[in-house]
Length: 195
Image (cartoon, rainbow, N blue to C red; front, side, top):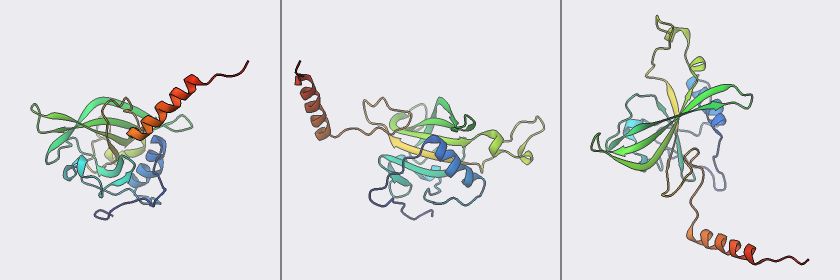
């Protein structure tokens, strides 16, 4: 699916929860199980600039989804993805930890002369217990790093003034929607109910 353009049919919105991304997409991919529907493409993160994902990654609203092999250095031609130190557990409905989600921000240029952009990436990983087998355990009993480990990425451009950083799901209202909402607020203030 690498070079094919991935589009959803009109009217469809791909809006999975973190749990669904890990259990229904990342786990089958990492386990080499068939994933149906197989709609999330594989991309090489080092060859993909965030502003060039349209037409390469699965696009749904303002979000882009793709699989990539885990790399410690997430450099591209024009910059790099920098960890911001936020890691969240992905927990199933049964309360079991099934994965982790790391947050990264795209920076143009090279450190220390780089510039932070508004591009955010959520990188989903399986829990160590589910993604490491005994052949990948070192002599100290800890998992060996595996450069071929798959991760699932959700990338979006954060709008200025947006406080929503956890899901990237809130979309900025158009100026017409903002006008309409303000008229509703005005009408609510003027409504009086009979005694």
